[in-house]
Length: 531
Image (cartoon, rainbow, N blue to C red; front, side, top):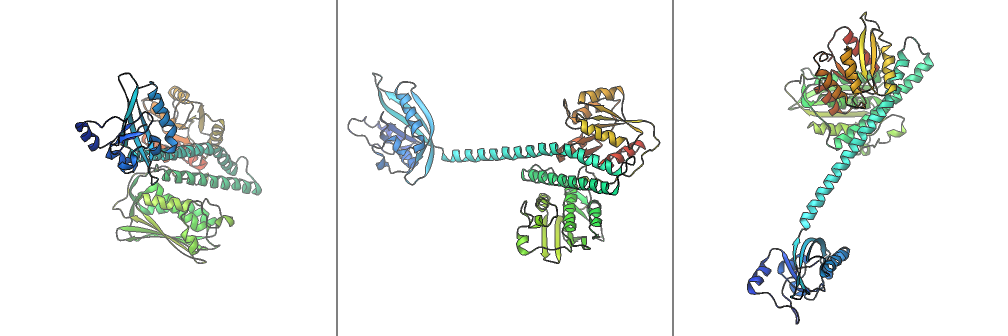
């Protein structure tokens, strides 16, 4: 590869400098220009080339091109020169590096042509050199950003797949555990009841950890869907309190809610705000003392609303507060036997940031902690509902025989264990009859032959997706009014939102909340519209 030089420095035997018009172009050019002997020695170079290689023009005389080239690029430079000299081609282009005396590396694009005399013998190389260092840096930065984006996407996809794969066995474990606990035909003794409760509790803990890790990954990847709007705060508080009330009662704690004297609304995502409150309330219960209290109150402060969760627990030392929002740092709680992942509060803070909110913490060892959530106030609640959230695996109460005629559930599922679980659940509702389709195409054909009262769809069938099946049913006037409900291990919020958009009346996630499915069946049986 040839390097341009700063000034003419011909010697005896070298070719004479170019004519005056050429000289003016040579010296004024905005790119480096250099003439080299076939041996690689510099004959002359313009000022721009001297600037590129970081040397005075007078110091370039007699230097070899290899004296300027980065050591790692010597081999490729020599190969290009030799292949051009021996007639393999008349010119070459190359991106290479120069190494300045101060150690700075400069990337250049070199275009070189070989000049021959009348007899065809090589006389010199003429090179044009462009400094592309900034371009390379930008390219590398873009490549790094793309690589980071691909890595983040791969991580999210991996966690999504792992979530799906782990939820499937959890579905069997928690589903059958719920059935064992409440099956009136085969009641359990007290010891067996405790054993089943241990299974449910361990499964629910694993599900919570799985959900937390997936949520954190999606937040970090910037792919957490948010539907921020005006939310009626009291409704969200009631939902969150209902989800932790059993936990508080089991711990012997008093959970007190002090609502605002006037209705308050906040700018937030309903589901994510509920998730935040459940996390804070759950922590206040888990890390409290026996017989302690948890207080939840709200207040309007200027253009903001503050939600306060106060507990009478062990409190935190200043050094613990300094590391409170570090992922996977449980601040020593891992030695107490209290279950947790160490990322719940990280998710809380990042979700609040996505909703233009913030969280503040104050705590005294031995006295308890106070968490304050600040959110922008809103003028009116958003009337739209939302599907999703974690299952509370509630009770399985309800009527087991509503006196209805035979009703049919068409269940599209290719996993035999999942089918068996739903079959067992429907034995608690004998007026419902189960039909099973092993793929999407079979589900469509069965629905067309004998329209069911409910279509229960896994979202990832062997031949098509649950969304595709629902679309095909909706296109048939005879089946358009048949409600479709998802039952899937795909718990991604964007998938749930898309199912809702396509007309699904509900979205049940695996592990299945058996009680929720039974309530849904009971609503349909008495002609109630599903939410």
